[in-house]
Length: 322
Image (cartoon, rainbow, N blue to C red; front, side):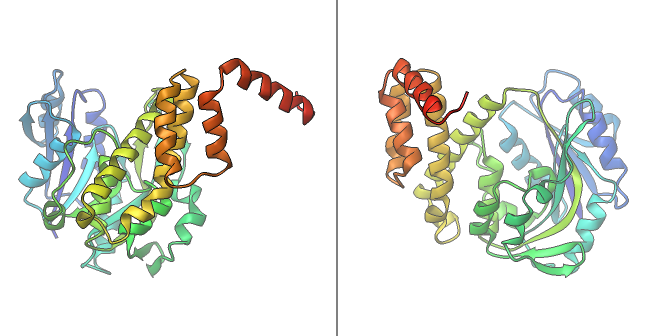
């Protein structure tokens, strides 16, 4: 089993040394470390070379293109993806490689992850623990105390959401290339879309331990949510346009998540005063289902703001709320 680490990096000179140090601390050393310098204007390439990584320099084309370049250039039969600001526990690769010994036919091996800020503060100790009920509902087949096999994840991943980030995934190189790698035209949810195509072709193993650290960025939560929802809407369009790339039934299975994304972004549009944009999103959401939340949003998209404010104040008085 040969493992190639692939790191897509853009202007990552500040965070990359800590990330590469975590790779160097692995108890199971990878066979190679590839850093794809995606058109950086800082010292990213020099920092990578100082840690002995093989550097591939390209024009700036985005993270998906950088990952695809690294996977195509790798010599290993397994690819360990890693973002340039994330971290690994020293046992991450060793425990994932051990998991493969239980089921070498799987498409990928993922692990749980924790989330932290730039100052090192851990904001979430375990993503899977925070979604335990949804994870257990997938009926994981326990192969070892900390290793489980999940099948039909081309559909069932939708019920748990994006729980397995790229830096937590060890993927079979031949299969990653066979499904076409990452969609280079997507700017959001490209990792989710890639996994949906990958899991249509094979099962997933999960090492139930937070062996990857995901670095939280400090940008606006509302902006992030709206952009992520836009990515999910684009993903829904991809599934509808090319159903053959995904598991049978993927379009229908994704509709509840699509509807939620449409409703949430309609709320953002109303808040920003873009009622026409809100109504366009609501029209699409209404094709899926029209419930109380949909009608409430529809009303908010046509009434003047002062009417909505007066109605909300009256409702609070009737209900005895401050």
